[in-house]
Length: 182
Image 1 (cartoon, rainbow, N blue to C red):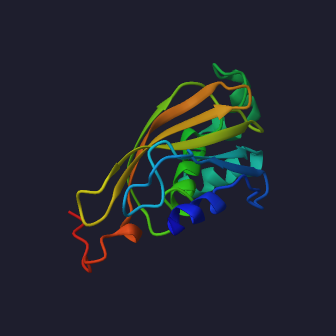
Image 2 (image 1 turned 90 degrees about the horizontal axis):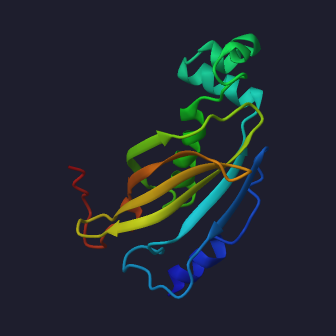
Image 3 (image 1 turned 120 degrees about the vertical axis):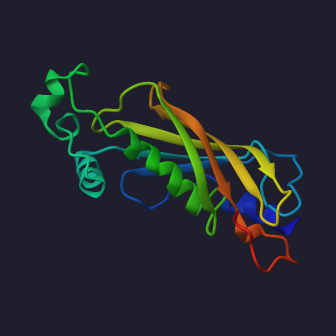
């Protein structure tokens, strides 16, 4: 019960303190947590990020994706979108941040991600990234969590959806000292 009480405190609406980011979470009430993990199916976390020119250029530099549609105003104008488009994987990278910081949190290991791009994201758009727990599997020494992932514009337009899977060794069975990762 203490772990659940801590989850409710730590998942309250909050500001992240990061420039251009807003954060809040939803914890489903009246659900019992699975034995080893302090969260339940249906719990979610959301963050909003503004995709500024500086962020787009930083991602291009890190990834090596210097496609002019992302970086050059004229190329963006001539494209089918009529303006520059933010890298899809840049927007989706926020999912990794949420998984590593909040849900399931520090110590988690990203196993897989599927992404389906539905609409373009333009420079200076605010995108809300939401992860929601859809399954928790505890039949191994370490729990595996499955999350539905959605990215939406401020007007509610779905831009990306998919599924993420992460391992949670931080919630390993107490008797297990060596984790079998295979």
